[in-house]
Structure formats: C-alpha cells, structure tokens
Length: 519
Image (cartoon, rainbow, N blue to C red; front, side, top):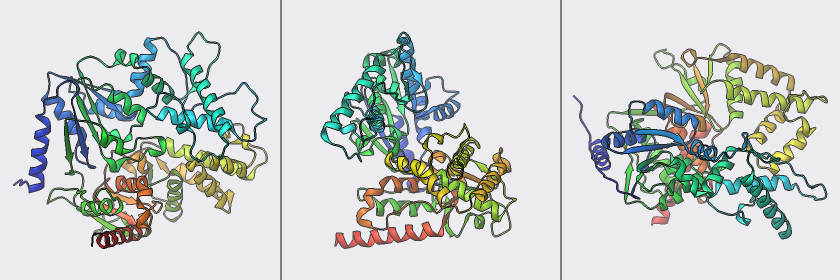
C-alpha cells in the first residue's frame, strides 16, 4: 500500500497551488527548486493545466533544447528554443550576417608591437566581459580584474574595445571587412537592440525558464524584458557552477520581482541519509542558508560511503557487478583516473559520458603538450606550435587565467617519462567503449553530468573544499560543484577518502563555530 508521509503531502499541496495560479500580463512565478525536485515536470504540468495558453521554453543550450523537445513532444502548446537561436533568427530576418566560430578572434590592423603589454588579450577579455553583462556600453568595469596597467592604458583598451564593438555592430554581408565572432557576440547585439525582440518573441506567449542559475546577465536581461505575457522562472542557487563562464550571481535572481514565489525542497531522486549530508553541507558552508532543507520520501534510501578508490565500488557484498559514474572536477583528472584504472585493471570497460569525442579531444591536447615539451619540430596540426616552448605557453595560460590549460601543462610537466605518458594515453583512448551498456565505469566531469542521475556515483579526489570556515564564502562555486556531484546518486554515493575526511571536517568545524557565534 502506498502511503504519503508529511513531507510528501506538503510537496503535493505546494505543487497543486502552483499549478492553480492563473498568471496575467507581466506576472511571473519564481520557483527555487533543489536537485531532483522535478522542475521540468512542474513546468510541463503547468502547460498541461493551461491548454488555452501558449508557452516558450527557454533552454540553456542546444543539448538541453533537444532533450526538452523530446520530453515535450506530445504537448502542442510548448515550443522549445535557446536564446542564441532566437537571437540569430532575428539577425537573419534583418539579413545581418556574422562570421561565426566558437571563440572571438581579433586581428589588429595597427602595429601594437611598440607597447610592452599584450593589449590583444586585454581587449578580447574586455569584450567578453561586456558580452556577459547586461550593460549597454563598455566601461572600466569590464576590464579584466587582474590587470596591472596605468590609467592611460585603461582608456586605450576601453576605446579600442568600443571601436571593435562598433565594427561588429555595423558589419553585414556587404562589408569588405569581417571579424570572426563567438556566439555570445550576436546574443549581446540582440540584447542591446530591443526592437529585434519583437521579431522572435510572439505575442501572448508565456515564458518557461528552467536552470536560470546557468544564465549570464545578458541572457537574464533578455528574459526579464520579455515576460510581458507572464511566465515561470526556476533556479537552484546551489547548482550555479558556470560563474567562470559569466553566469549570473544568484543574488540577482533572488532580486527579480515576482508576484508569486515558491520553493520545491522535496527531492524524488535520492533519500536519507544522503539528503541529510547534503543539507548539512549547505547549511555549514554557506552563511546565508542556515534554514536550507532537502526533504524526501521516508522509504527512499540513498547511502554514502568512504572508499579508497573507484575499484572498491564495482562489486557489492554479494559479488554482483555495479556500473559506476565517476565524477571529477576537471577533464585532466578524468584522464588521470582513466589511466590509473587501466594500469591496475586492464580489462575494465570505460565509457566517456555523452560519447568519447570530448575526452579524446582532451587526450589529443595532452599529446600536443607532450610534443611541445619534447620535440624541436612540431606537427602542423599541433594547435600550440606557435608558442615554441611549454614554459612560454604556461606563462601565457597563467596570464589569461586559463585554468583548464594550466592543469594540462602541469600534468605533462610533472610526468617524468613522456614516452610512457604517450603509451598510457594510447591505452586510454583505445579502451573507451562506444556503448554505455557494455561499460563498467562512466567517466564524466561534474559540469557534463548536470541534469543526469545514476544509481551508483563515485566522487574523485580533486574536489576543492576550504578548511578555513571563515573563508568558506570565497569558494561558493566549489561548494556548488560538490553539491551537484553529490546529488547525482540515487542508491549510493561513494566518496574518495581524502574528500570525505575533508568534507566531514568542514561541516563539523563550521557547525562548532556557528554554535559559538550563536552563544
């Protein structure tokens, strides 16, 4: 017999209240929802409950769009789009053509060699910061934070950035000049030119915005300006893990005005005792969330265990094999984990989450770095060949704060036998399975696993926790990364012993200090 506990009853009543809200023009519902609380289901049910209304679901990226289109395929009153596809569609209507690529590429006609500083990096960074913002003009606040320059140099960089932006804004298919731009450039152009919004945001269509914590200020500004016919915005402040890409500070989401505000703190994904551990992590490591609570079904059990390595998780007490999702902060650590697994257990089958393309790209990058370290003549396909040496590339990567590249360089530098490293990379690449069904261990970064779940999850040893409780607010994004990783498990979470000990210590220390402060 199915019996609801008190928390399930509260959650059901809360959801029914949301579903029964009838929105008028300019009204919105703001929902703060914990991991596994059924956010997408809530939005789907709201659309089904309002069949006389049309809805536009704003997806964070293309893969999310495809996923939601599949989930909503039998619901005719929901369309799914990304903001980038809407922006590009509006530009195409005006026959405005951009030369697109993944990254912004600048070519300067004037000679900058007379200057001691590398202005190209500063100008590029300024433009990227401007595109991530909701601001309407480039100013000093968009300059890179770590920039030791004189005031006159600040002015030069700002003015040059403005000139390039003006060129981008004016360029079309009839111009003789072209600047290769990233996709966030035309999204910024779309945000600044509000008359374009009317071309793609239809009248009398409500917006459904999920995962708003992943949006940057530019995207959020577009969304806010187009809630004319009402809608719902959903976010989880503890799943904000893209701030390094310019995602908005969730404080801004808290400040968004709304007529209705609700919280979904009941998770269907995992149960106790994991829900208690996650609750204690957030309460102790985030000063502003002392009342945070994840509730769950009384009969849902999700355990957690301290283990030495992922191999210890593969077989249960009865000798039955399990498939494990191995989560890491970085791609480099995934490579390290994969190599270590195969060197000790060569017959284990590995699968790269979402397909092997991304991990093979990381392997290829590391090969290029090994070549840069050991060879005088570099292959033509080596994307680092213009830097001449690994030391020079490392200096540039540190200057540009390219954390991903820095971690790869350090890995290659610290590996004493380069030939052995190349053999190990070959072993890993050749061992990747193309089918998840035949794999023993699934390799994934936390960022890539976002939105997914797995029965058994193992956390690698590269997560960062600040042991100093007084500085825990400085590492909010790292705490969020750990929160996302922990909340992927449905049956058991296995935690590397180093991370486990550090996490329990952090929780314990912060709770003691909070008790002393309260007294």
